[in-house]
Length: 73
Image (cartoon, rainbow, N blue to C red):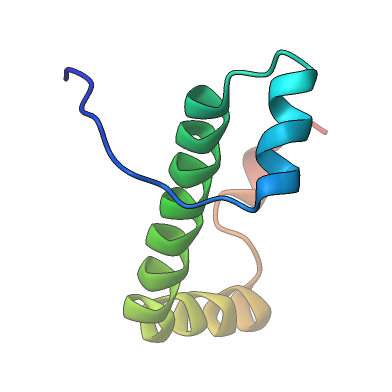
């Protein structure tokens, strides 16, 4: 996917410090937004699949891990 221009509002001191250090604010913002989006997708997935996760955890607690007999460690 290509890149698009967006407007961001930053604290003046933060922007000045980043410029003084030669940091690429666009790339830093992009990385932070990507991390936040990933975290939010994961959080929503856990909520959406909570019942299945809990059911599997109960099954493992009751019966142990599947294929345990084949583990070599």
